[in-house]
Structures are given as structure tokens and as C-alpha cells.
Image 1 (cartoon, rainbow, N blue to C red):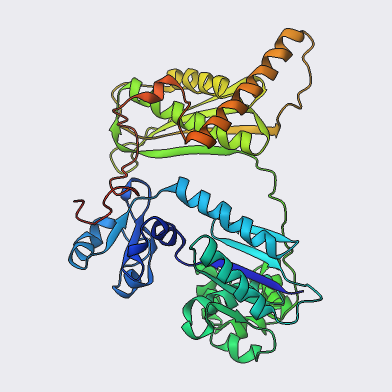
Image 2 (image 1 turned 60 degrees about the vertical axis):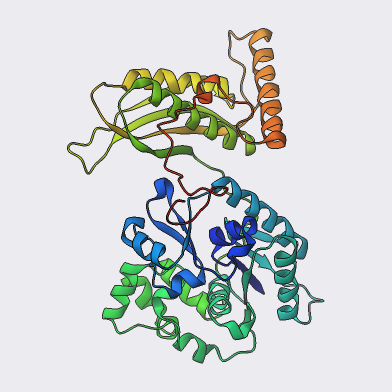
Length: 417
């Protein structure tokens, strides 16, 4: 087997630079929901010592002093760029696994492929020229080794963004890799291994299988095999069936009034419905919930579970159920900081057993609802997200929305000017 891991460099920052190419070579960071924490950094921002996951208020002064450009998250942009990246990658292999929004595994076990490194350089060049996204590519005989190779390609400029472990001294390479950098080995496991004197990937690889199984798990054994060049983690070409779909966001500020909460819950139900239909699914159950802050007094987090008459993907029915559930759980006098909608009991859309007392009129209505939602989705794809939406969401106040003071299209400077 020959795997290649394609990893987009500083993905959220790279997406923002597509819209603002003048930011190339300058320090840039992207913040989490509500502009809370740093979740993506350019190399220049890393060089300034801005830590990943750091609350923004702790580094605000540094960003202002050093001219760091700051962006709020723009998930619509990131998902669209990710879709384009995966489309380009699919041209270079018959078997591919989209591992995350910014990573994909490619099967490069192509008999006619005599120079995989040069082939990977071609992939990298295509992504940079066609989309504007820089990537690092690691090549190896297993997925775990390919992850390590990609990390080397990202950190070592001499690799040109592509690094292959084929034909290299694997012992010497793994001896320099901290065991905590190995895919699948978390912080607690790293601490436990350190107590046994295992601090490098090579020492972990060379540990006895029965010892790894006794002290850790079968998964640890498989990771060791992967480091030995024995492929144990298969390529997942199809997304596993989802058991639930959730849409939720923390509010920009605490809310107490029911009308604002209705807007938020409606928006979440619409978002969850769009994701549901994009996967050809329908939901049999909807759960709606509210929550106060766990850091301000006693936590209050009511929830209601609504059983649908029949599995559906219609926003009309999902919003209705969500608002009915909200009415049940709402209690005045609480400062809610978050709301959410979860869709459960998922199955293929349109594949529903007819009820004993359901006539043709009920079946025809469900068919019309699916056609209506398909038309709404097409209009929103063509003319822009939110072109067609429930009237409740045309409010100009939207106090429930997370803070996005530095969203793409605004100035983006840390001083907000």
C-alpha cells in the first residue's frame, strides 16, 4: 500500500487569504465562535508566540501592537473551499478518504506511478494554482506514517511541502518523533508511556504487542503495527451513517426573552434541516434545548424531545416541532447563553412505511414538501445562503447571533477600525 495524506496549511487562515491576498506573508489569526479563542494561525502569527486555543482577550494587546489581522470564523467560506479542494484531489486517485475539512487520505498504490513525490508535487501545484490553498503532503505505507510524513513536510521548508518515508531510514526518523506526535496517542497516553520510559515513536513501535495490549489497548497495538509499516487502518471511502445532526451556537449575549429564543431555535432547525437533506436523510425525532452559563450561578439546561408523526426533512415541520418544544421548556427570568437543535432517528429520506390510516393525500403532501425543500435549497445555493428562509429570521436585531465583529468582508484589523 502507498498512502498520501494531503493536509491544508493553516486552513482557515489560508481561506481568508484567498479573499485578502495582500495578507500573504503577514500575521493572521482566526477566532472561534463568539470571537472567543484563537483556532487558526499563520506561520507569522505563530512566530509572534500566539498560542493555539488562547482566549483572544489575552492576546488582543499583542495583535494590536504587532499589526496582526484578526478574523471571525466564516464557516460558509471554509466549507466551500474544502469542497473545492476535495474535488481537485479526487482527480488524482480512484480511492480517497475525506478525513476532515482540511485533510484527505489518497491511495497512491498506482502501478504506473514511478515517482510518487513528483506526482504529489503536481497535486500541490494544482491546489495552489486553481484554488490558492497551500498544502503539505506526506507519503508512506500506512496512514499513521503518512500523517507523520505530512507533518514533516509542513514544518521543514527544504521538503517543498512534500515528504516521503519510502526508502528512508525509518528507525532514525521515528527516533526523532516525540511519541505524543503520533496519530491516536493522546495526552494521557503520552504521560503513561513516559512513565515507562517510552518517549519516542521508535520506542513505542518496538514495544511488545502483549505489553501494549495489557497496559493500553488493542488500538495501541494497531498503532505500533502501523509504525512498523503494517497497514491496519483502512481507507474509509464513504462517510459512516450519522446517528444525529446537531446545530447550536452560543449567543452573542445572554437572552431572556422568548421571541429572541424563537429566532435562534428557528435558525438552528433550518441549519440542521439543510444538512439533513444534503445527506439524503430524514429525522424521526427532534430535540430542542436551552442552557444558561455554567459559570454564572446554578446551571439551568432544559430540553424537550419531539417525536415526528413520520420521518421528515422538511424545514416547515422541523421548525414547527422545534418551536413547540421551546414553548414547553422556556422559563422566564433565566439568562440563557445557548440554544440548540438535535435531529435523531435518522434514515433515508422518502423511505417511510405508510401508516395504516394514511391516505394518498398525506403521501402527496410529503412529496410536495420534499419538492419544496429541494427548490428552496437550489435557490439558496444559486443566489446565496438565506435568500429563502422563514420570515422569523428576517429580523434585523438578531441579538442571539454569536459575535462576528471581524468576519470576512469587514476590516479584519484587530483594532476593529
